[in-house]
Amino acid sequence: MEPPSPRLGAGAVSLPRRGAVGLLRAYLAAGLGLSFLFILAILVAPAAYSLPRGAAALLASPHTLRALAVSLFAATLASSLAMALALPAAYTLSRWSFPGRNLLDTLLDTPVVISPVALGATLLLIFSSPPGQAFQQHILRVVFAFPGVVVAQAVVAFGLQVRVARAAFDAVDPRMELVARTLGSDPLHTFLRVTLPLARRGLLTALLLGWARALGEFGATVTLAGATLGRTGTLPVAIYLSLGALRLDEAFALTLLLVAVGMAALATVRILGVGRE
Amino acid sequence: MLEVRGLASRVGAFRLGPLDLEVGSGSSLVVLGPSGAGKTLLLETLLGARKPTAGRIFLDGEDVTGLPPERRGMAYVPQDLALFPHLSVRENVLFSRKARGIKDPNPKELQEVAALLGIEGILDRRDVRTLSGGERQRVALARAILARPRLLLLDEPFSALDPHLRREVQEHFRGLKAELGLTVVYVTHDQEEAFLLGEKVAVMMRGRIAQVGPPEVLYSRPASLEVARFLLVRNLFPARVLRTSGQEAVVGVGPLKMVVRAVHPPTPYPPAPGAEVHIGFRPDEVLLIRPDRPLRPGMNCNIYSARILDFLDVGERRVLILETEGGLRLDCYLSPRAVRDMKVEPGETVRFHVRPEAVILIP
Image (cartoon, rainbow over the protein chains, first blue to last red):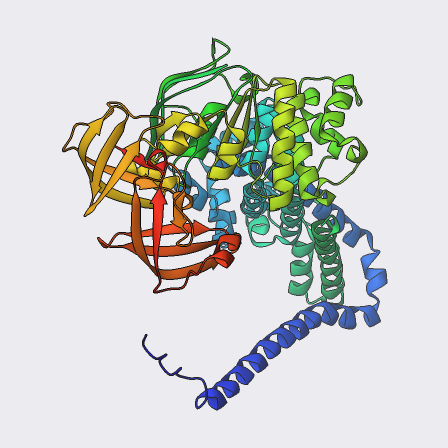
């Protein structure tokens, strides 16, 4: 038998190595600490600025409540509509195998990677084309109107939802579905009684993340639906208009409101995600 | 009764079949094969999760090849059992009835099957994840049985259990199968399980059925070298037939001569003198001869002397690695008791005997 070869790197090089590990640890800790401080600043700054300047009164104004109502209503409608499309798309991509699936899968990410302003401009172009105009004349006015807000937000939310929903369906073992089928359950019953309940948490997360994304949407919304306070003025649009008019107290009070609603959505996702495990 | 005729399927470059299988009503078949042999693909094709490229599947005479899984009357217990984690034990077990729109939460059938499987006490458990391995196993079986299937398909059903629990559940299931008259197809890579459960075993290799037969025939007469290797016949040697008479043949293995007496003779048998064959015998058939005692009656052939090369301790038994005069290396299993009684040290010379009936001749 050959004698064991001496192990390299065991003794002599350990000192500089320990230094490198220490450095790496410091980098990791600093990264986490700074990220946390940064996020904390984002949360605290609008509160610190606007609370002493009468944010409560500003937020109670009919003007603000109107923007909040438009935002909540639009985001809820948009994320629900987008989810209605994302659900079958995600399930099909997760379960069916067909030529071009990977291409389609990649294309569905388009709304996530395109700049919202560009997306809004593209939507504007589509609804100004002859078929788009026909749609607007006979069915629903979209451009510079409330439905435009919903369409813009839905497109943005969809990209996120289809991704999260697909991951939720991917996590359901197809064997569960096969076993259900062999127990006499038809495809619809199997989907409703096995797939959907097992993917439930991921799908709710998709819905809520889409909702939060729609709530914060600005670029596509303002491009397609314009910025008419009262009708298409969502919270982000209102913030933009206040900033433009140099009404900083109002702008940061609205920011505080938006941050609070977003945080509530995140907390809900968190509770749903961890709750049943 | 299950009849499979010319069934073929494929996934990517892997081809299954064409293959034929037959399982009589109330009997069982074990599909035994190494991983990657296509066992899971066969299961999925039988269940209707994959379309076959050719062939037909008949269940009790009905052609079910084109039917969806829910209308085949085949219940399936996968390796990981696939209990529904969002349902209680009772809801899991009654799933097939709910799927058919039957709502009764405590039918007579449930009580009967629960009693047979000993799961009455855990029916109202909310979370199936709190069950023990053996309980999960029995719940999965109860769920499948309550679907009243014409055929039950089990994929490595007992492999996840502890060895002692495993034997118990296997034996319990054997009794259950007989009592309920279930027709069962098992799929496994574990020989011991296959031989314990199957009235018939089909050895599957590279997508094909290499051999089908009762366990004892497979054990004593593997049809090919590949099957023999898979069934762990350790001592396999190329040999040449020297002469034959009746059921006996004398073969030359290197410089040694060995008498073979076929118990389950392959056809044609005996092979023609001069034929190139393989012979094999299991390590537990290599009997060491104690130097201090007279030969037992009947030990009048197949006696060789060999040197002990090595000695391994593998738990329940000891493995001796022997080298004969002609340079054949072979394994011999000894019980710890035999090791105590005899002097077996590397370098020692011993004599051993192989019964002619224990020698497997592979054409």
